[in-house]
Image 1: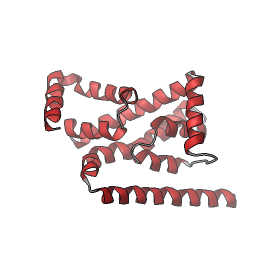
Image 2: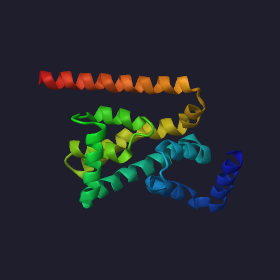
Image 3: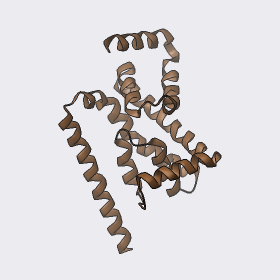
Image 4: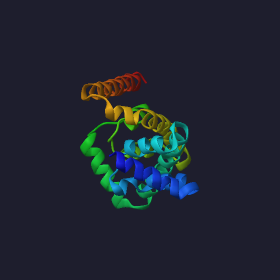
Length: 183
């Protein structure tokens, strides 16, 4: 693993000023390579440092949100596939914007699926991109800053973090449902 880190760092040094653009491009091709978001953001923190890595990850994730919007709206088969996945993972469930934002923080939750939820909640591309970008700030920062540490935590610490996020998600769902019933 150490040799991989050294060779990756050497490659990034050799490409010079193109490195940030290649990193953003990596975010865009990440789904094709079956790389989790957290892995790419951790690499950004390793290669560029916290601030630049988080900023570049935010740009890459925001562009990926835009690509998701185009895929869903231009390719009906892709939209059908995402809708089937949505029905399979979250059957008969409506998520709030805050719940989608919490799920975006959780690693390994399908990025395009969460984008589909946001598309269904918004009316225009502009509205979707604003809400999506706001929801990408936390994952870009957290994954870049803590992604490496999270992967090195003992299993029970990682499990505790997931349980905490699940509890927050559940609380928001109950609050959202009680608010909807009172209206």
